[in-house]
Image (cartoon, rainbow, N blue to C red; front, side, top):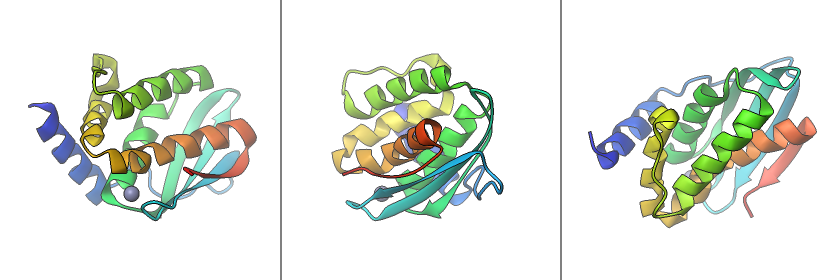
Length: 147
Ligand code: ZN
């Protein structure tokens, strides 16, 4: 399967059937994110044990890319500590913004996000959930905007 097919299949699947959709209540941390360019809004809530993400959910409303990206992210970061999430975010950011970035095998389905760089206007749709997650991890509660 080439990356274009992977992109289409993974985005469709996770948009139709988002994983970890909902809100943790109570949560240890949460943040709201807004991408005014597209109108995407989402909330990420976390349950932590020390530095590690025990559970993560997202909800909100947005375009297919923002929903699919958030769904993929929740699957990828559950059980990871802050340092591992930071490393993963670096890789995703490179994948979304650098034409020459090659997805490494550790990324699994997240590799599909490299398809987004063909559509520069949608990069913020895909990165919104990650910025929102970082805000939740940093502050416990916050609102972020991609602008
Ligand atoms: Zn969007």
